[in-house]
Length: 55
Figure 1 (spheres, rainbow, N blue to C red):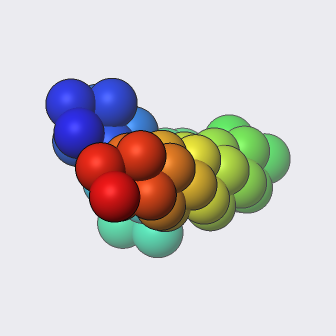
Figure 2: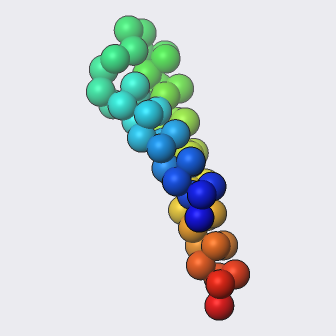
């Protein structure tokens, strides 16, 4: 469950940089948006695997 929180916090940080406008160039914002979705999908996958293993 700890890995899920780590990837969720990383995706939130990348989302702030990608969608919040803290990054100056558009290329950096695009990379941050891609990282946001990658980390969100990893967090979701980790959560599913964790919940399945507890059964």
